[in-house]
Length: 382
Image (tube, rainbow, N blue to C red; front, side, top):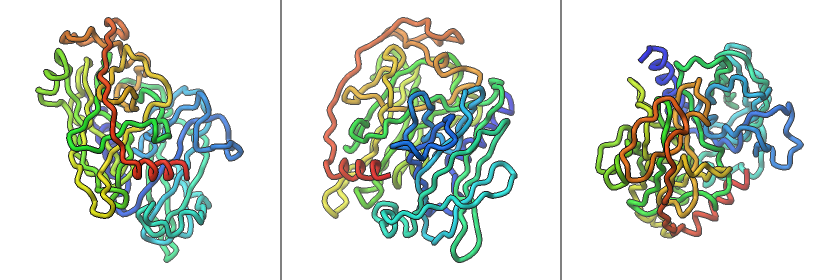
């Protein structure tokens, strides 16, 4: 594989997994992020929610890479949320590439002040910005200015606004994230899992997923794992084989740390795969008997059932993104799954030519009422 791919993936992984290398105690919450043609969205009833047709990029913003937005038809990028820290701040600023830092983005919010149980830190602050999209390879750094003096970068994200070459791998989400926790897919009992079967027409560079999780104040830190399997005959046979990608993670809160499985040498061949997520712990916290949980946001639109077959999700669909070549459109990257029960043949580069399958198993989850109420409050409050 070309060196460009390896370099691009290494850089993407560093951004995704080590967003705040020198200040790991901070926490970034992205309430909303999307492309738009509106230079000012403050007049919207819910400015953190993208309007119809505006690409939802909240997960990519948190992970640190928006991907290639070339020829997207939009002129601006909007993001808002809050940053919590153990140091008092006097300002937040934005720097595009090597340009000067533009300060003045710190937003004081009485509802956040002193709410350490919610944010995990003593000093939470809001931010909101709408930036004109730049051409080429773009790096955006969010800076914090300390009340005690000094300044530092607290988050970095990148995007490309250049013609795709096929040598860079970018996230290809199947939809946007539904912000309503009641529609999400929950895991909160040891060994409980959810999975989805899909087929790609081009090579795979990795997997990204946005998640919410218990953070210690509302249940034990969630320990869970993600695995990508090459599909073979059925689920039992598939799960008996070694995964081609895997990661075990202890989450300290919503998308903390960012979850990403990346293959750093050669990409994974096109074909049919099963992506599985499983929770590994269920012990009570000793405070009020809460259990750990990890939650995957539902898709904000209906998915093509010929391309995505879900298992153990109570009839719901969770959102995820596979990394694929930047010159393959999302609709062309995912193909219809081969007929159930057959070991698939890799589809090569011709999308949508395989027969259709169906038959998803349904299991109802028991969700702790207190955890649901807390997360709903948290998501709606911001």
